[in-house]
Length: 277
Length: 145
Image (cartoon, rainbow over all chains, first blue to last red; front, top):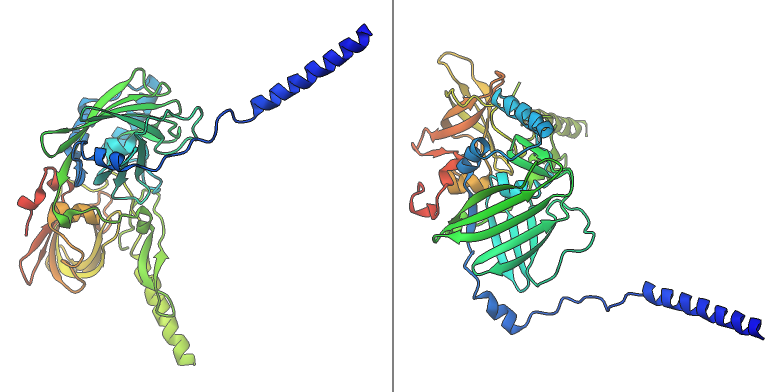
């Protein structure tokens, strides 16, 4: 009797155990839905600072900072950077960005030579770069957190919040291969575990400043801070144009039927068009 | 039929020939050009590649009087940057234009350079290609009309 009772109790407890395990395996919440924006959400965008127009980078300052604000590279990385700088100076610039993969984060913000525009929509700030159809940052401002284990991507996973007129952006989940670059010829893959914190705000009427802090323990001995500057253009003739990097790998030609085609052209390992022989 | 085939062959040969004078360029440093030197070539524009990420102009001409004309490749920044920084548009320099180009030559001695300024002989109009010429807001107030 006792034995029977025990065996039933045991069987029940095992069953309940399985049931509770099964219950735990089910998603505990309903899928998170991105709600449709309300009229108020759209109206609230008008309270944000005006970042409209086209923003082109202060390249001269990028060059200057490559000399005056060197990241605190680890000794091993510093050797590689110094070699790259020497090669560049000697007229043999290392080809960091000649494959048309996205420059990614944080290199895009650090060393771009091309303009961008910034779009506000409810719950989102979107940055669109001019050269490269693949320069695009989605910054979620809807209060969400980062995923627990985001897929690594060139631009990472960005969440932002407004502190007054400053957008504070936190970015994780960046591909380890994405460069921390100080010029188009000097930089190092972040090698993993990088975090980028930005404070983006207007200075005066027509300058956008991106105060960047880069935490990259695999290549930096401590966090590195830099500010990158963009100038606003409003003339319609300076609007952003399409800029497909891969177009450089083709030339407009005719095929044997007279059709207009893009014909592939040979790739120089250094990233150059080959001059006439 | 044979004539047609020959015609196709000749077009194909031309296309391959034209292709051999071009190659690729992505986002990279420009120190392969010697910025301390400026050379000048006078000649005729043979091809304009108004493409991203870098515009190129092929010009056939001479650097020294008496030289035989040769074909040179001139590199520039992107269409967007040329538009903002140098007052360019797609059609300001056309095939057949007579032009004078000031450029920084390739260090390796090949027939290529970074275009600094192109002056059209017939009109006297000129265009520069300095990416840093756009480093201020509201460029329309100062850029070449």
